[in-house]
Length: 123
Image (cartoon, rainbow, N blue to C red; front, top):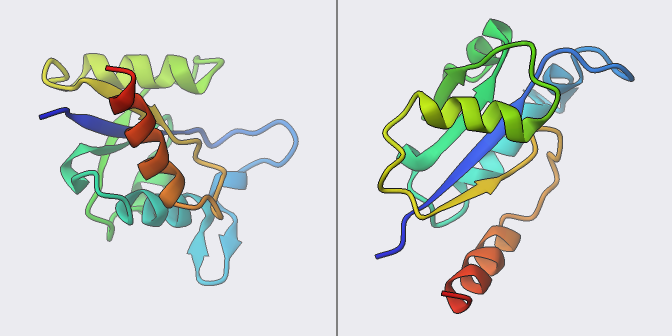
């Protein structure tokens, strides 16, 4: 069985729109909507992680059944943030990591399924 995980990098400081990730869309934050999209996929909730540099983001997601991993504020990319988060969990059993950006609240969760299918075909 192939093991997939979704990592959602989320940083609080944004140069163009500070605190963008916590901006409300309806009654939820942007990051909360992204987590909802990830949870709509076939990937087990226990394999969905938010890698963040912010306690505010973690607090915002408290009611979600999601693991948040605190990372450094020094990272310049989401990939760097994910790499640090991977070092903090037992990642040996993961075959594939999907990087789902924290600022895409209207992302269609079926795209994750298409990506998974494509990755499995390339095995």
